[in-house]
Amino acid sequence: MRNLQTRKIVVLMIILATIFIFNECKKTNAMSTGPVNTVTGSVAGLVVDQNNDPAANVAVTAGKSSTSTGSDGKFDLQHAELNSDAGFVIVNKDGYFNGSRTFLVNTTTTNNVKIMLIPKTVSGIFPSSSGGKVNIAGGGSVNFSSGAVVNATSNSSYSGDVSVSTFYLNPTDSNFKNYMPGNKLGIGQNNMKGIIRFFGMATIELNDGNGQKLQLASGKSATITLPIPAALQATAPASIPLWYFDETSGIWKQQGSATKNGTDYVGTVAHFSFWAAGDLLQDITLTATFKDSSGNALANKLVTINSATYGATNGYTDSAGMVSGFVPANDNLAIFLYSDCGVQINYQDFNTSTVDINLGIIIVSNNGSCAVNDSSYINLTFNGSSYSWTSAVASSIDSGSQFITDITALNNNYINLGFYSQDVPGTYILNMSMQINNISYAIYSDSSYATVSDYGAVGGYISGTASGWVRNYTGGAFSGAALPISCTYRVTRTQ
Image 1: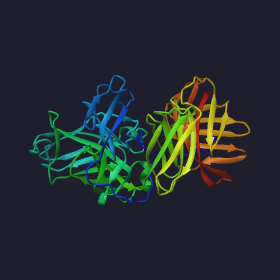
Image 2 (image 1 turned 90 degrees about the vertical axis):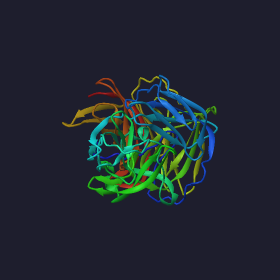
Image 3 (image 1 turned 60 degrees about the vertical axis):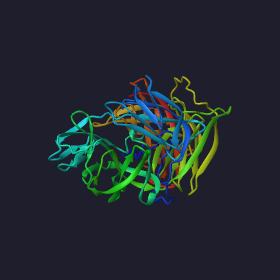
Image 4 (image 1 turned 30 degrees about the horizontal axis):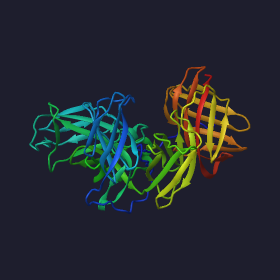
């Protein structure tokens, strides 16, 4: 396989109808702390479990309106009273942590969201009188001092056993965008508003033996340890703000800080909810609307935005075909639109400055419907042009510890996609080389990945998508500007 290297994915998140990619400059505008301005808006969505199966009978609340999901996991709340700055919908079901989504409200359409529930499992039990340490499920820990717990409702002291349910949320996990609460909007010191670049997150809940909620007593604290994912350790600062998620406003709020200790962040907290370590970053607002050639809105379609520096993120258009949210200032970005069956149907690259940007109405010739296709192909969008190969094969080789998938198509131009696949569907680090018009290119950015939707046996098909950034690669050295690539593939597996 050409130029196969082990690389890390930096997968940054979009929270469905709202897009988030991040910039390292500090935010300079403040969020209003006056009375909340409310508007009437509609929100529809899908609630799933961690297997992506629909979650039925989940309670859903937005403003003063409430409903529940049907057997298909879907809900629809029309004419709800929402915060004009941050629309917020929260869901809850016994046996799970609360799930939620915060979004930019479009009052003339139905806003679309997706929420993945996190199962609530007990990670440990300790006596309130003596305190103790509990390991967080998935990584990290929380240390409690003695006599630090009270009843959350009555604020009366509690002296029995404390049941601790936890879950670590990895910011580089492909599901992070679905199961993290709210979105990445945060309010820092001096009421500065911005987007948070997360380096670790956990949810922690305390209960007594009867399931009643407990909380830390006033003046008491606990020490939390949050692992820093391997892909983020090189850019993790020595000291970083801590944030808790406010389930009333749907916004992250800064409280305290954490210190880097090896591959972890360690800090103290005075109460429990979702906690995270992260930086507050600059943002501007992006808006784009997708319609087909007949003027029909392309609603609830997957949108992906790629940044060579900050990674890839995705979300869904609303009922008017619009997507709106936060993107980095002064960056080169690429936006992709996909059909219901995962085929890329539009591409556009653009630059941002320090002011909000509206890409206007983008006309797409394909209406996003799924057509049956039994052929083998690779379709590539590169630097604004399209290339196709109708004969392509894939091999899967057991390297002794991992399966390597190698997808190759050759003619006057060639393309080679490689990734450690484990022989199962999933999202993997992408390595890629290609020759277009006699010029050689290779993946150079860490923000490049392949998603495999189907992984057939020998004689069957491997299919999915890939996206990232390439540069001219000649004589063993990179040169020239970073150029975005995106492709869909459905290829015959030969080995």
